[in-house]
Image 1 (cartoon, rainbow, N blue to C red):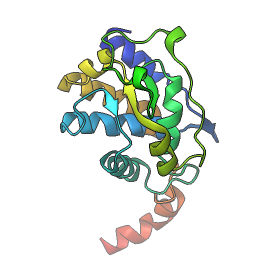
Image 2: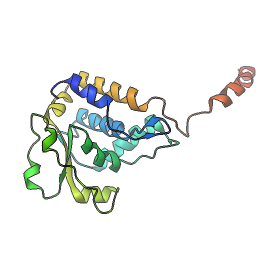
Image 3: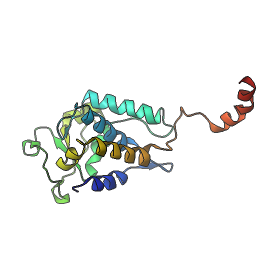
Length: 188
């Protein structure tokens, strides 16, 4: 992958779970969080640490697009861990000196990627922080994300593909709204 077009294709086809016919939004929200933090220069390198800022941004974006989902729960650890199945993301374990080099300019080949095991403590921020120094996105993607137009395009792709038509507990029931229309008209 070496162009925005390639990343649009990959972002459109993220490996996500499907629940009740809906794609899990977790990876999209994590990527939107990273895009926002790159834009605000909180993230300045292709190494993505599981920081409090990233967690807060993830929760903020989740709330904006899903509110209280009726089928998904906001949990940053799952997409942070499972994003390693995408061609642009790799987890770097703590104390893995060889892997802690700066992100390569060229994306990693499939043969170079080594899938990491779920740390003891399972899916928790503490266990992820104890097991992994950071996640690293490939250098080409990081360079693409320096461009405002590219960020905007990738945001649109993620929102349209994973965040539209998500069922939430906080959305009004359309039937109730229709039933209330005559009453609303009388009040107005």
